[in-house]
Amino acid sequence: MAKIQVYTGDLPASVRFGKSVAVDTETMGLNLHRDRLCLVQISDENGNVSLVQIQPGKKYPNLIKLLTNPKILKIFHFARFDVAKIKHDLGITVTPVYCTKIASKLCRTSSPSHSLKSLCYDLLGVELCKEQQTSDWGAKTLTKAQQQYAANDVLYLHALKQKLDALLKREGRAELAAQCFNFLSVRAELDLLDFDNPDIFNH
Image (tube, rainbow, N blue to C red):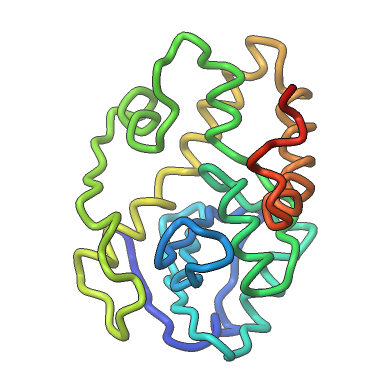
């Protein structure tokens, strides 16, 4: 059973992490400019989960220090959105980054789906419940169901990375994946400048 801790203020300075953390966010919606950041979930390699509730106008120096630490890898699923949202709301560039969705698209080309739910089932045999996905993440107090949902979004990312790294190596695409991960901060900047539609990489 995962240990889940909810913080209504900044991440405590006493919380320690290893060489990598799994990260996800919850927002009021999927519009980068309109919908505010409500929650940042962080899990270490041992399954300890920190849920940091984000309030407009408040400062989060310890959280920011973690997300910008060049010695700690941040593992996301669909990092493009999360990195852009964190940059928009907290004013920082998250680095370094690994994205399980990009990794899956590069090495699991036979799969019709690269969602977190599909990855967890296909690679780990874990079935995720997504019922709380569209719940009110701006609520002052998170329900136990919301807390568990938020935790599940980061609890399996370390294990997925391990599986995907092996597949990337097998298919000879590990270096290509690394270059894609390094480009994510630029992709996020383009999204924030509304160069996502039309995309400058389209014809």
